[in-house]
Image (tube, rainbow, N blue to C red):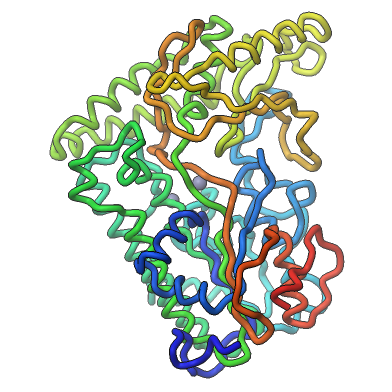
Length: 514
Ligand SMILES: [Zn+2]
Ligand SMILES: [Zn+2]
């Protein structure tokens, strides 16, 4: 196999990394495939010709935030403990964020016998800084999932170098509801600038020495997918033909920037180097049911809505129809408003209810029953009362319809006994509600009436659980793998590529690329 030939994009440059991992957070495989085929993404298209490639799958009903920890620890969530962004604490009815300031298990590159190796890790989502790595690590420079962490680097002097050479994050927090038309264009341009800055940064450090393992992750695909899905998807309730005609497709523009970045870094992989390109998981239209789920549960139980929720829907609708100059003027007000509603939701009045929503993210929602004897102020008694409440709730959830099409909104209600929550760091939901794929125009049922979709934090796109990978190296043959791989398979695979011991993992080495 000769992916290093002149016809391909890999340069004949000197070897800079024995194993180079180019991670992309949340790049949708279906879009990638379409744009590889129509010539939009020439580097990926050429890579597909010369690489072993295949699907990456993540367990269903898990939070997408578990995917990179699966990759970098080599274990599933049962061991590393990262399930959900927001978790419920049954002692006080509060929702709190999971903050991975340390890991239950360390990254695979920190295992015994790896300490002599030259290893670089740039922007691995969720991974904490490990001081003392023989190489370098940059944590959270311009990333989507920063968990309010500051930018950190090892060696510490690297931080100054990064900031003086590449500046600060040109994007900042991407999760803004009701961006104006102009703001969407600016957002897209800033994301592209960030991809370019990261690409330069990666090339700079790749060149700086001979690496045994170099891992970098780009995540602008994640931001643009969440925030601009409705701009190109004509089936989305927020789609606006005029905006689409003028702005084009910001997701495509960012994917093109990633394609360019890949072309730049591939020049630094020498003849014996192995390149692994991985998208952790994908993106699709956001299920509107998740964002208003607690309100749906309130209406089923017959308790009053969170004050402000109806108003935010109305304000959002008006804002989308106002001219740009007016949207700019209203920006501070609408951001403050949206933050207050989120705050209210997080505080909640859960102790007074029969059941409430626990956000599990992505395509699912969690329901927790306020069970007497388990919760400190439980309202539902175990046994007959519980069974009646639960079966009534499930029946009502199956009555929910997409108001536009009349199709059922809920695909399945899965009891938590069917889900492996081993090692989960919060109190688990009792049911997981799986939403049907598409975003409804509105949500309705005889009991809940009509509920307008609200895209909290502006997310019109949300996670899908399938990813994709490509691998090019001395031991690979071009072609598609029949069996999908898991993210935790890469730790033992990379260990074998580097002829290093790995010890216990939940993964299986991917023989086809070894
Ligand atoms: Zn996300
Ligand atoms: Zn983002």
